[in-house]
Image (cartoon, rainbow, N blue to C red):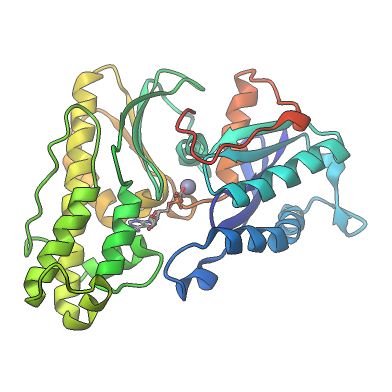
Length: 353
Ligand code: KG4
Ligand code: ZN
């Protein structure tokens, strides 16, 4: 079973080919260099960049997989097409879904529309010989989402916790801006934190009931602490704060913020696991799961537990199309039916998997 996956939900244009769950190719063209100078993603520019990149990226996926006939992409070899249809930036999603729909119709291939967060969860089984062990709990931590999801089996998702405001990745990105660290903020904060003292500054944990999260207060707490450290009041322009900070202070703020964010995530996870004692596997997913300190501290936090702890390979933590094809692979194995390519809907903010 050979699946072509396509992903374009934010600022990565990606295509990947999987055969029976094994990776044949994985092409990701990132727009990071374009958005570095802006300090963030500009949706219209992202959509236009996807439009330029998408067909060459798909061609490259065929080349890397060695699926060529007379030097051209060999479409006869493809059994299914899978594409991210939600959530994401509207214009970005449109490029991927319109491309996938058109190819499905022209090449007469069954089309699967895959939810982005589901793909992130399934990224955990790329390049491994393991299969998911249920029931599992997944912590999905990306730029747009922070959710705890309970999965009793394939294709059954129960959102048992979610952020009430900012996502944790968004919080990393906003703190990076306050500290003057380059886009994308998450990896920059993680890098800066390496030489910092995580005990230097103390930030309060939000008091959110149950398994929900709130990260907007943490971002504001960092802002106030930076203002205090710089000896300025809250009317001081926040984009100028970075000029008043030393490299050492920036590293200490990065490390202290990162430690607090990770502690909040791990505490909620342990709460979720207490409420679901049947869970056998704990799965991290989404861009923030690349964070090395999170991986280290989670290892310590859950040491001694019988849980199987899974992180995706760092190269599959961020947005890619291999995870889309992988999620589709498990949909097909679970007998999920393809969709009608003429009626594929996109939804920029769907929380429902
Ligand atoms: O899953 P993803 O690539 O895109 C979305 O679906 O949103 O996640 C992107 C988010 C961004 O907020 C980025 O700053 C964050 O993941 N991120 C990280 C790290 N790498 C990416 N956050 C913390 N530490 C990292 N190493
Ligand atoms: Zn993502």
